[in-house]
Image (tube, rainbow, N blue to C red):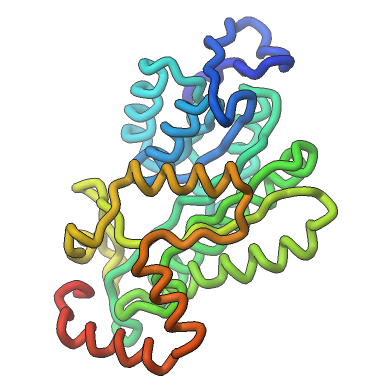
Amino acid sequence: MSKPTPSSIPGRAPVLGTAPPPARPGAFSGQVAIVTGSESGIGRETARQLCQQGAAVVLNGRNPERLRQTCEAFEAAGYAVVSCLADVTDYPSCQRLVATAVQAFGRLDILVANACISQRAYFVDMQPEVFRQVLDSNVYGAVYPLMAALPQLTQARGSVTFISSISALNGMPSGSAYCAGKAALSNLAHTLRLELASTGIHLGVVHIGFTQNDPDKRVLDAGGQPVPIAYRPPRWQKSQTEVAGIILGHIRRRRQRTVISALGWLILLVHTYFPRLGDWFVRTSFRRFRHWYE
């Protein structure tokens, strides 16, 4: 974990013995965010845009070198950041993650539960421990950070965003554990909105579609080995910058659900009103474009 820097938030006492970083105006000025899985990919870009719009951000990941490089790049850009090396499927680590935000910046307003593991494997081939690993990363990787952060978020009447996928809306061949975990987040958010209505906390879900990935991004195969992500047609992909911008708009407007891309809305529409047609389309496209899934 990098050395904490103090809060740049107006009216907040800085950490003793340190000098506050310069304030940055923007839509999230004065707010503190944790973005899990922000050492790379969509999480990193979401954290970057939060910083650019005035937030102080706790960066998180499991790769020490990649997290260090990201944190140093953000610090060089003048952003108010600290980093916390933590596995979000481990509750004590999540408690430490939240403590890092409070120690460095004095409060917590925003949680973006982005960290997860994906897969390229058919259910019939998967080892039980691999299925559990993928499912745990998507479910407990969102549940544990929220449990740890809930007192701070309640005090701030803050915002929680679960990063899901359009594949959670209608399933995806070779993604059973991933789709199950992402689908669970929607029901979790709905249930918590009912339970926590009196707190004023915003609970939302963003369903992400095909997105350009870092060249070194890996997912798990049936035996738990990292393999490259499946091919996606470039014309169907949004950039990480575009996706992060949509996530920030979702947080700013405190939306309950955001579905990214026309394809995502089409899947949602067909799944809701014409489920058999949706299943037929997925099976047909799977036979035609099997190489996308393998």
